Image (cartoon, rainbow, N blue to C red):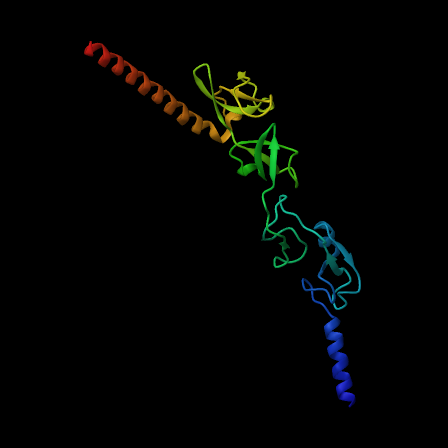
Length: 212
């Protein structure tokens, strides 16, 4: 009988013990050093890692964020070993609008249009990405861009949206961003189309002249 009591006591003690980098004896924390816990932005409590050295405490971090995004298990956002990762819900791209133009909230590095800060939830990396619409002025092709993002020649009244969205004719890649090459291709196509139309009208007039 005494043997069984000792066995039950040992099992109970073992269940209360926790190893370094392991789960705390209760809750969802991890047993790590107090310095690692505070460095990772967590808070620690005593008494939940009783079998570990004195500087090993139960570390908890209620929330974790990576680049303002959610959607999968991401390493490096939580205290503890590599198998403790930030588990977050799937992200749904929020919609945003600027000067009457609709866009989507995304990481600015993934935006192929022009972007506006302060219109989306999350940290500064998440910005409102809006499409760059082509525009035509003075026989040239440009892009509709916010006035604050480009300081070359601009023409008002050629673009959809508010007064701050104007037509820019520029070879400045800083203004045109990722669409610089697309603009060149679009310009070539536009010029070719103009030439084809001109040739068509010349041939048509010549044909009518010869019929007389």
